[in-house]
Length: 539
Ligand SMILES: NC(=O)NCCC(=O)O
Ligand SMILES: [Zn+2]
Ligand SMILES: [Zn+2]
Image (cartoon, rainbow, N blue to C red; front, side, top):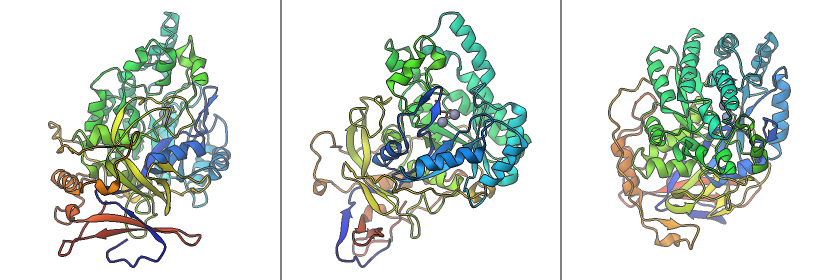
């Protein structure tokens, strides 16, 4: 990566003129090859990471979820066995703490060692009788995380209230998928967000709240944040910005059940926009997918009893395009913030930075050539997932990867998916992430009206029809750069990452070159400046 590079003979050059060169996406939340509620996810580590790459994600962080009473190390080893030979891109692991004993604390310590490379643990405040931990043990688990320099993550919903509401709804004859959302409305999520923040504060621990799905949950986090002694990070999902809970009322069971997940999508039609604004304003710091796909036959287990519908939806493939479409194309966030919430912040929080989440010398060559004008229509008929359903079915998105480079190998090549099973590697996440434990806490947001970023008004290029030849594309960097510079590139502290003028995207073109020869393929990114042009910056 640099200027005036000497390009070895036989090197393939990808001209990225008019495109954006981004660090590969990091999806901090997937469930591949998970067995839950009597079913197994449709996507395994091969099809799930294949779908990730197709969408511009080059690292996923999956969850080891032990059964109650099961050794955490045994469950971790089982996950490594499932994943190592199948992953098409790099992956890391969070581990669930689904029960408690002193032996669990000891295993958490082992998992945090260099040998295992885990730095995050998920605790469930819901799924009573399977994964739920009571508050006493949640408190101890958070204290343990703090002692280890690890990050506690919580699934924030009140499991007891859900259990009681479920009994009442079923008894009243409300058995269809809409009952799922009715049993766990926004208040049930917001209460748990607040409680998790209180417990983390008592434990003097940082906290990561996974899959925040409602305005009430975000409000609870906003209210708690000024009180917190340690940073609290919020994660939302592609599902909640890309669709909504109106689908639970669909008369077709398959359609409604296909959207069942926890916490649920919200019927409030303003939720997607509010979650996008929360992401843009740094109230919420990351976007994951919570990819946990189930075939129609498995969703059918909940026919006549919504509480038996396996929970989970797709998202690992479409997460980035959905956010670009809903967030960047609408002017809610700029491209720098897009990179922050889809990649860079996950790398920082889980201590993979700057190896991942950044385009720089020494980083892994996980790169995306993002075409902001590429148009496609999302459909289960075309997606790379193994599942027969897509919650974003029929949605048009403008902005998608044109090339995806995984560790120096072009794995998505102008529309052709060329992944290799087992090519990805397990990446260890060391404890004591400087981002989490170094004091860079997300600050409380000053409540002020949302200031939109300038809209990107770009002509489109269609994939599902005849693609426009690359040579016909106009240089679009100026508009993108103007947009990025005018809105600033903020870290969660609100600090500017770079001063305007330190980068000059409009006067630069980007190209990626890959050395094709030799077993160790390498990818380099070149930045070409016009004669007399100023120095350039990259995300
Ligand atoms: N979210 C969901 O519905 N399924 C996956 C399990 C979880 O993350 O709670
Ligand atoms: Zn969860
Ligand atoms: Zn999940």
